[in-house]
Image (cartoon, rainbow, N blue to C red; front, top):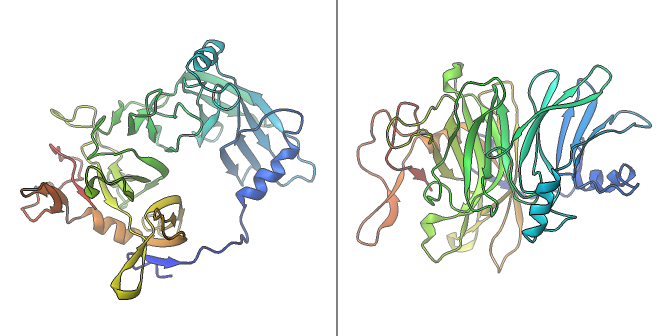
Length: 375
């Protein structure tokens, strides 16, 4: 593979060496929940320096010692409020698989505390989990998780805690229809909330978030960005076409929103299509459109990690998977244009060939009336 190229494809190898394989971890987890407790875990947080593994489950957070011969499991019980469970049941949800507090987020807050969020029986909640010197648990400062954690335990979402701000791609309603990329303050932070425009398919169109990462652009903290990787229904494909495209979106950390039309909205939001394809016969490429997972491999240069994506096909004729690798240079180049917009008698998405405004779209001081994208 060539990390310097814009897109490269290799076969997905069905083995795992020097890593933790999720299927084996799930099978082995039966040891810890064989006493009748339903695990329902979806999120892990490993601290290699301290030698512990946090596991977010159904109504519980588990602390494991992966390096122990006979690891002792410590747990903290964190259920949803009874009234929220009852409201969830009356809404037609399952008591076993939906109407509970499924822990979906575990993010380091500082050296002693973990920021944790759960679905709260379709009433999201967040709190701080303190780990004492003898790995004691202490849960405190429970607060609303709206805009930080999804309502449903099955909804795809991504979040990243950075400098006291939580950047999350999630929905903010019971039905999961109002999805957005949010920045919300956690305890002790000063910035106000900010989000993508609601119900505007040019910003986000039925997104399924896969991952998010904080990556600096330069040595200046003012240039730090947060990147979101997701898939969505392609607006370029037409009104009746349900085609799915994978995307990478970017926002600036110091974005405070617009002063007029974009109050509490991102003024630096940009998105680009994440292309994963392999050349075929007669010049026809095989497209792997659906992003399934993302991994950012750190290098000696923190500004230029290598990005690996696992993709599948959306075709009903051909089934396959691929791993594509991207350099940050190629991702940044996409955000530098060219941009797409709608024009012409049939109002199609085409390349914008006019003069690029100054400051250019995607910079903090730019307050656009529309959100440009690079398909």
